Image (cartoon, rainbow, N blue to C red; front, top):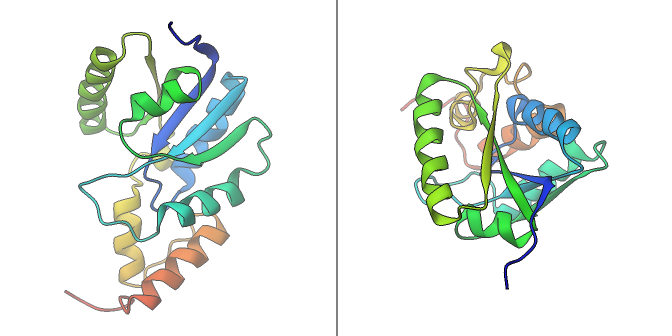
Length: 173
């Protein structure tokens, strides 16, 4: 028996390590497009995260609490399985650059092959966020740079604290 999937529920997955203003822009815009938006905090085997999955969920919950139709949930494994598990048909993805577009296009084709009932919808990043990535922000934090233009205050404080804990602020490589 095939599970009934809703086109009014979308899932936006990522590692969100940390969540930044570009992520939040996509989440807020997505929340206006769908009855429910689930933010899936997942693993990336190619990255060593600064924050645990539970910490990333908690940080996200702090900054999306004003959006009543958004919920945050950690997941393991394939994103398509997670999307189906919450009853959604739509994967919402943000695009910043041409390299994102190539990667996301390939991923969407793979996801469509893995689960032909799921669709991917892309939202273009706003210009002011098109260069922002969590990886770059972790590097800026490691060298003690100003993060105020890229992160909500609570997330900035958490990232700066984590960089200090790791003894990374101000160190050169």
